[in-house]
Every structure is written in structure tokens, then in C-alpha cells.
Length: 274
Ligand code: NAI
Ligand code: 15L
Image 1 (cartoon, rainbow, N blue to C red):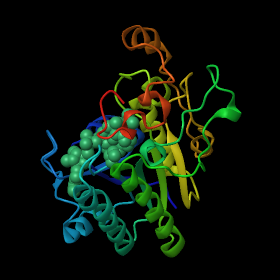
Image 2 (cartoon, rainbow, N blue to C red):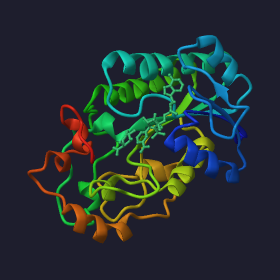
Image 3 (cartoon, rainbow, N blue to C red):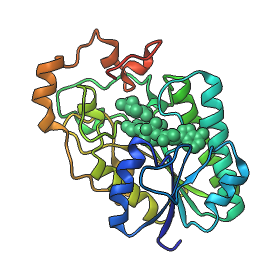
Image 4 (cartoon, protein in one colour):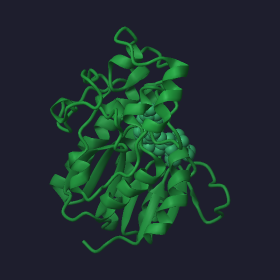
């Protein structure tokens, strides 16, 4: 497929959407913005709920690719997750299929595999100890279940309709890591833009699932499939380590928030910090 130029960014008013609105235009993309809420300073953004099938179809018409960030981004009652993340993502895929959009980059999450025990060993972990991308999915929340569904939906739309997706199991994409867990799963915004660009432009991705993080010294998972797309992370959370560990203490085996990839999302209810 030719390199995409016009890209629909769903969830454009959110935290990650705001970061990507700043960073992605430098890669040459023209962004069409969609969110449930108006996007600050962007009067042309499409304000709609993913529940509105007709509006979603109109929003995808004519774009070369979609970065799908919209949805509930934390744990919530199942009924809300069902509407926004499960039905909403289905509406987006249907619209993309009907309008002939060839590629979606889906914001999956580490919480699709959140109940995977954190790998043990000295830092940096031996590559053989890193969690592989084909580890069995173990969602830690209804939210994580919806990301698991999204990955299956993406596989289905590739197998049945030839619509390509890169599902990015994002760790924590924020300007800075704010917990000791994030030292392992952090993705700097600049690396996030690098990864989305790679996911939009790599050839023949079919449905590829990747972990989304920076090249952290304390990494828990294997970035090989992301690198296969051409992603070359430039950042590492390590400069934040000393301060965060001094404030919060290092990872402890008895702390449930440190025992699994998903941090405190495994608790009921989930508790900050993750
Ligand atoms: P966020 O909650 O800040 O933004 C989500 C946006 O989606 C909001 O602006 C919201 O208005 C919009 N939205 C929610 N329901 C909608 C609907 N029914 N129709 C249209 N728009 C709707 O979340 P954030 O942090 O920006 O995350 C973006 C995406 O990336 C989410 O799908 C999240 O699950 C995923 N993700 C984010 C991570 C992170 O570290 N920021 C980590 C893993 C996954
Ligand atoms: C996610 O999936 C959330 O959307 C984000 O807000 C963070 O909580 C992140 O995971 C995380 O695991 O830190």
C-alpha cells in the first residue's frame, strides 16, 4: 500500500491524542481529528460518539489510514466498556471496511496481558526472560478484555477482509514515568510517535501485535516485533529511576502492583499508582 498521508486520529482530545497531535504532523501526516469531546483549538475536529455508525462512516471516508485511540482508557463498568470500546471499535472497523481504508493502528494495551507475572531476574533482563509477544492473553480488567477483543477483531478483519492492523500493546505513554512500574513499561511520547509512524508505513503487516514502549533498561517485554516494523526506540526511562525509587521504593515481590505486568489493574478495584 502507498504510504498513508491523511490519517484519522480517534480519541484526539485525550492525553495520548494530544501528544500525537503535536508529534505526528512532523512525519508528514495530515490528521483528521475525532473525539466525543471538542478538541481544544481544533474547530474542524469531528465531535461524535463511536456509537453513531453513520457519523463514524462519514469520518473515515477518504482517509488513508486510522490511528484508533478513542475509548475508555481505564477500568469501568462492563456496560460502558461494551459500548465505547467493544461496539465502538466494531463500528470503526465496519466503517473502514465499507470505505476501503486499508490500515488501522489500534491502541491495545498491556492490560490485555496484565495478569502475566512480571519476569524475574537481574536488570537488564536476559533477552530470553522478556515476555514474548505471543504470550497467552490474560486480561486484568473489563478494560483489558476489551483490548483483547480489539486484537481479535483486528485479526478477523485481516483474515476475512484483508484490512490490515498493527495492534500496539501500549505500556504507559506519558511525558514522564510516574511509578517504579513505569520504569519498565514507559513509552516516551517521541517513541510513541516513532512507533505509530512505523506501524503506518511498514509493508505487509497483515495483523501484527507489538508491545509499545521505549528501550527501557528495566524492560519487561520483547520489542522484537515492533523493531521488525522499523521502530527504533530512542528513549529509556533510566534517568528517572533514582528519583522514583527514592520516593516509592524499588519493586517488591509482596506488592501485588509489582507482581504482574498490569500493575494494580489486577486489584479489585484498580488502585493508583499502577
Ligand atoms: P484518554 O482517556 O485520555 O483519551 C481517550 C479519548 O477517547 C478521550 O478524549 C475520550 O473523549 C475519547 N472517547 C471515549 N469514548 C469515546 C467514544 N465512545 N467515542 C468517541 N471518543 C471517545 O486516554 P489516552 O491515555 O489518551 O489513551 C488513548 C488510547 O490508548 C486508549 O484507547 C487507551 O486505552 C490506549 N492506551 C493508552 C495508554 C497510555 O499510556 N496513555 C496505555 C495503553 C493503552
Ligand atoms: C493503560 O492501558 C491506560 O490507558 C493508561 O492510562 C495507563 O494506565 C497504562 O495503561 C498503564 O498501564 O500504565
